[in-house]
Structure formats: C-alpha cells, structure tokens
Image 1 (cartoon, rainbow, N blue to C red):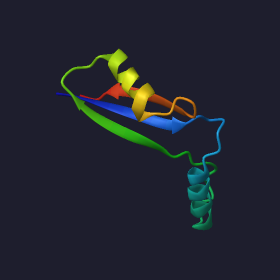
Image 2: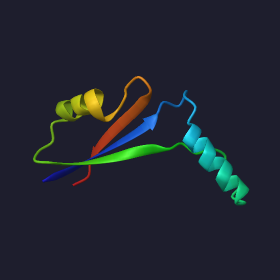
Image 3: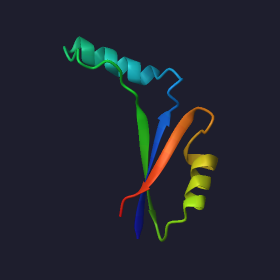
Image 4: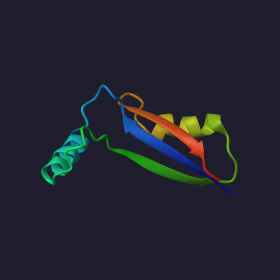
Length: 77
C-alpha cells in the first residue's frame, strides 16, 4: 500500500480570506511576526500503486479546482 499526499493551495494571485482572518487573529494575539497566512488542504490517498498520470487526473477532475488552486503531490510511503 502506498500513501500519496496531495497538497492544494489557492493560487498566489488570489485573496485567501480565511488566511487573512487567521493572520489578523494571530496579530491580535500578539504574534506580530506573522505577516501572511495562506490556508490550503491536504488529502491523503492510500493506493495499491502509484501512477502519476492517474493521480494528476484525480486532482484535475475532482480533488482540486485548477482554475483557482495549485496542487502538488508526493509519495509518502
């Protein structure tokens, strides 16, 4: 069994309102060293084998929205 971890983030040119909210909250809690927060998601897939073309197809068709999100994946184990 192989674990594939897919990391999905909003494209850098898009406003991350959730990230901005967290950054503002951290600043209010006196963590002034935080300048920016970007929030994404991680999806872990347990697979029988790794076929990068098929993983890319999963990401493009369902897991990520390629119009507004960037993604990368890694084989963890």
